[in-house]
Length: 168
Image (cartoon, rainbow, N blue to C red):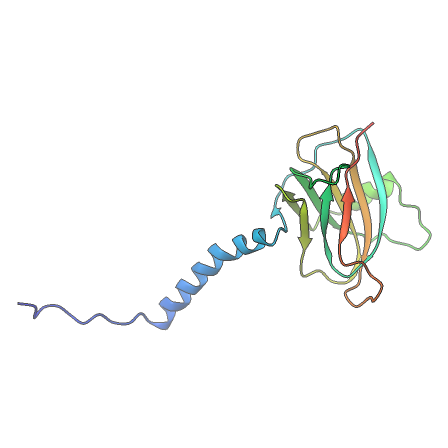
């Protein structure tokens, strides 16, 4: 009666690797979002009538939080990351300087849905510019923050707090 039923074979190693790879592809993006790092985007911040330039100092990691003036976490924010390859001691960082860095192309950008937290991982030590702006609302200024990333620095801040300001 059951003579034509064949015993079930165990999946091979190739099949097991395929299943593991599929799980990693599906689970890893969820883990990144669960850590509150934002999601990668190709969007640009909306243009604003006001642009601020800030020295963020030395950081041990490129992570932080974007907040409104009332200290609530910002939403619908885009945080762009650029390498500051133009840095020279004593050189003024003005709007032309920011434009030159932007023309070199950004490394990455994150869209912050809620919670206002961002992080950029696996970066080499060096100088970077973060550009923070809203994805749709022109009443907020765009802020460019210049930082130096040094994972071994003892006096470096661990996180960066960015407070959005109203455009004029």
